[in-house]
Every structure is written in structure tokens, then in C-alpha cells.
Length: 112
Image (cartoon, rainbow, N blue to C red; front, side, top):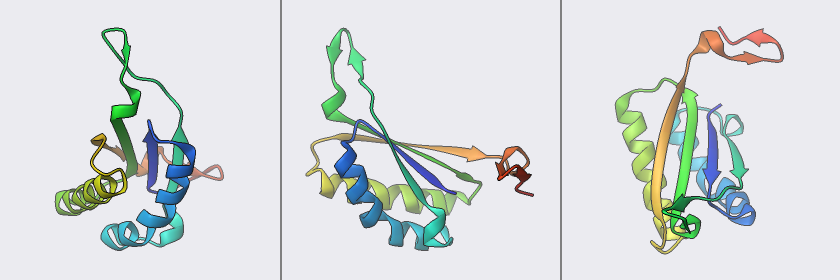
């Protein structure tokens, strides 16, 4: 944990980004690099019947609560890096989902 879930990004791009984003993200979050996982989700976005998938990128970050300062710093870093990677050709949306430790289980054991 945390988990970075990419939508509207090609498989190979997520694979590459998992290497590009890991070190600095772990530094910002203050967690071991091997706690961060990356997920590729294939989907299609429609607006008024038109496929607009190629113009939009969604990144959902699921993690345990961090300070607003850390969240802002990570969002700024991710947005900047993704804009450079995609040559500012995608509209980037980053959504943070805060997980409650009491509701998180690893190998059947509560995380608390």
C-alpha cells in the first residue's frame, strides 16, 4: 500500500510509469518502495455518445491517511511527471481514496 490504479493508459505505459514514479513517490509518502503497486485498468469513457478515452487519464491512489501536505506534494509530482510523459496531451485527474486501517486485511489479518 499505496496502490496506484491507472485508467485510460496503455498497459506498456503503466509498466514504464511503475518504474518512473516509484522512487520519488515512496520518498514523498515516506514508505518502502515495494509497498507501492501499480494497476492497469482497461476502460472506455463516453461523453454524449463519443469515445473520449484517449484524451483523459485517471489515476486513483488508494492509501492510508496522510497529511494534506503530503497528498498535495504527491499530486503535484504525479501531475507534473505524467504531463511530461504524455507531452501534455491528456487531461489528468488524480483521485485519492483513504482506506481505514480497521477495514484493511492482508493475508486474512487485520492491518491494525
